Every structure is written in C-alpha cells, then in structure tokens.
Amino acid sequence: MQTFITPEEREKARLYERVRDAYARRRALSVGGWVFREDDVEVWACPWVDVFNGLMSPRWPAEEAEVSWQKAVRLYQATGQGMFVSLGPSVIAPNLREILKRDGFRCSYHVPFMHLQVGDLRDGPAVSGVSVELVTDFAVFRKQEHPWIGKLNTKFQKARFHFVREQAQAANPHLWQFIARLEDGRIVGSSLLFRHEGEGAVFDVAVHPDFRRRGIGGQLMRETCRFADWLGLSELGLSASHRGVGLYEKVGFVEVGRYSDFFLSKGRVALLS
Picture 1 (cartoon, rainbow, N blue to C red):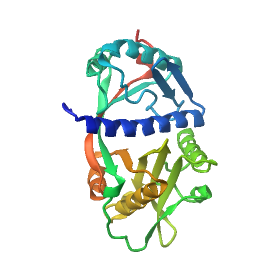
Picture 2: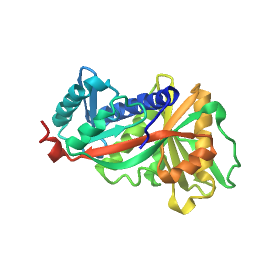
Picture 3: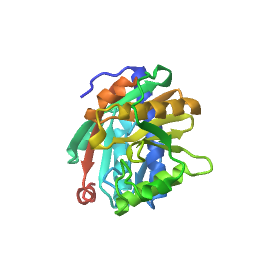
Picture 4: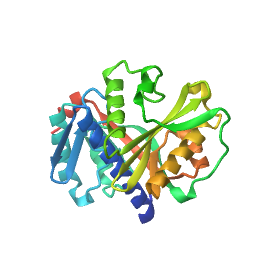
C-alpha cells in the first residue's frame, strides 16, 4: 500500500480520474445505465455490463468521509447493482479504507497507475509486417473478433462495442479506437484513447496472446500517444495490469501509485444501512 504521495503525484492521479470518471459516466448513459447524484457524490451504474459500477475514487475531505459514504451507499442501493470502489493516489480521506472494511468490503486487487508526459514518449522500432490504424469503419469487427471486447455474442460485449462505436463516430468524438493489423489483414491488438475537456487517458490495451512479446504492444502505444499529441494532449494516464507495466515503461510511462479495488455484491449492498 502506498503510504506517501507528493502533491504532484496526487494531481497526476486526479487528471487521470477526471478522464476515467467521464469515460465511466458516458458509458453508463450509452448502454442504458443510470447516473445518480446527491450533492458532491455521483454514481454511475451499467446494468449487466460488468461488476465495476459507480463511484470510482472518492475524493471528499476526511472529516466528511462518513457523511459522503452514506450518500454513496444510498445511491448504489438505488441502482440495484454491486458496489465497486477504487481508492487511489488522489484520496485524501484515509479513513475510507476503514469504512470499507467495516462494511464488509474486501480488496480484490491492486492496480498500478501510470502517467506519461507526452513529450517524453520514447521511440522504438516498428514491427515488420504490422501496421497501427485508427478505426474509422467499425464494420471490420463483423468478421474479426475485437482484440479486447472479444466476439460480439453477449449483452456485455455488445454494450461495450456500442459505446466505443458511438463515441468514436460522434460528430465531436471523445474516443478513438486503434488496432494493430498484420499484412494478411488479421487484427491482433487494440488500444483506446479517450479525451475529456483537454485531458486524456488510454484504456483497454490488448494484444492477442499468440502475438505478445514481439513489440506490437509498444508500437500500438506509441502510435496512440502520437495521436494524443496531435490532438494537443500533453499528459496521459492509464491503469496497468502488472504484466503490462514493463510495456508502458518502455514507451515512457512512469508508475505513480496504486489503486486498491474493493467490491461488494449487490445482495450485501442492499443490507448496508
């Protein structure tokens, strides 16, 4: 667990969270979910999409943590969904962890948070026979499996795909989907760039298991970050799997801190008072 964080690191986390929160909010509205708000607390919920619903990283003052927490619980109970909370470097109310433990939450896992000053992007060799493309025609996924979403067979997958396509094809897009493609046309990787009010983050980076450790992920990330630079974004954040940390470090991302992710099932959320 991270015990100390500088003001600069906290601001980097807040930048990422502003973009991530906007991403989650837009996704909830896109797939028929809900947005609930009470004063300073907002919850987003996506029915049947996944367990990661709602209040992603509370940032209220420590002396108001209990009051704000009760608001969050009431809002979650209105969704009828499970409750997910991610406590990261920006949290200034350390007693939230004690509140979570008290109410029966268990930490699912710790997620590294990484940050890039786009001007510090590191160059690297292009992979022979691989091109990185910005997706403009989403019909390509009718014949090929989406590298991160998978086959569009379930409500979960269709909702995810609908959100990505809707945001990418909007008149004023907030989202850009990139793919890594072999010379024979096969799609073997993808990444997603999301922008909110002049700030950006990268989500859902994936490379097909059969093509990992060949430099494809690095090429995909560099092209995504170059596009972010073209958009005028000076910083990018992302949450990394532990397996992906090395990849992101190679292109210039720096690990800033960790998010501790907590979850409680909808049945147990309903019993909270």
